[in-house]
Image (cartoon, rainbow, N blue to C red; front, side):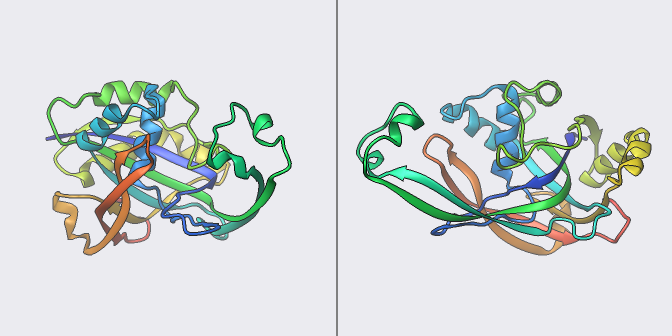
Amino acid sequence: MTTYLIFTLAAPLASFGGVAVGERRASADRPMKSAILGLVAGALGIERSDDEAHAALAVDWLYAARIEDLPSRAPRRLMTDYHTAQTSKRTRKTRPATRREELQGEDIGTILTYREYRTDCSYTIALWPTTPTPRHSAESIAAALRCPVFVPYVGRKSCPLMLPMAPYIVEAATLDDAFAAHDAASVGQAGFRETYRLTATPRQLAMEGPHEENRLGRVEKRRDSVLSRKRWQFALREEFVGALARGDAP
């Protein structure tokens, strides 16, 4: 039996950044593992500069995301924000103490970027340990998700959650069984979700191995394995992806 920590990640607007190229900041249609572990780290109160703590989370926990459809016209539809920002050329050589100090002077320029977001997002996230004694237990992570130290958001600070994360811990033989137990325990939320048109229909599963659900078939490489949060460095990681029968959950 394996201990699974399962929680909800839902937002009206989300951004899952990949490799940034030029002025365009693209967004994937599902969370990166680094984003999920970053959210967990923030909930635990881990500072971004604490590379050792972030490395421990990356090593201790495996990850899966169940991608779900909300009853909207276009769940996870891509939305592009045309974004401008002023910056100073001096910041390449100096580190101003404040934004006001950065914008003083005559060498101010404007940069143009396109930032992508996903609309009406709903995911059920599963984490399970690679070791019997992870540095942060499932219980401590669940408690942190209920009462986070740093405010959680879905990719950017402009993307707040629209549902409680409601962490749930279960002992199960497989990931399928863990999701099924979570869904059965969440029946009490059905009325609320129906009222506000937030009933989620599982559509796809993405997870990393090794695990028996590697039968999902398609393999994708994602650059979201944390090397250093402090230096913003990430390595490639393999992820297995497969479609789910509409209305069925693993």
